[in-house]
Length: 130
Image 1 (tube, rainbow, N blue to C red):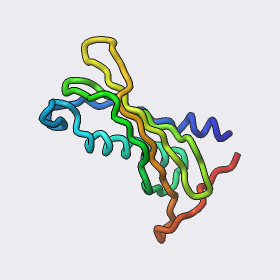
Image 2: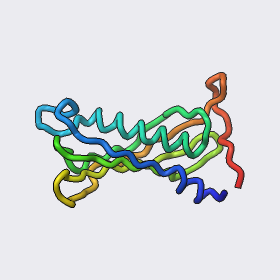
Image 3: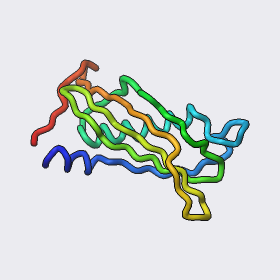
Image 4: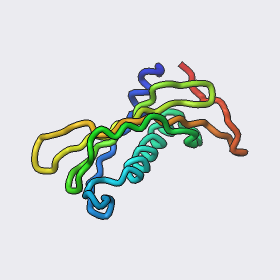
């Protein structure tokens, strides 16, 4: 399997409904809740790519460009964008979808870096053979 095939096969899509218990006093999704969801989809993507134990070591440049109102769906998409010796980067996008129309727009983007760890919780090479 090529690197590009492995990246395609590990791309992860998750849909969630935005309910009032996840919103702030403006009736929009809490930023921290969005980041939690993004880290989760990034973790799943990284693990599906590597099939190893992975831990988040950083999140970078989280851009909140649109508020996400209650009563909408969100789609989170995670895709590996860079693979190093022991680490990889996952780019995550969140799209808003209205429940009762075809309207869809990008709301949030960000990058998450993960490191593969061994049984002693030490960095270990990502096993990938082309």
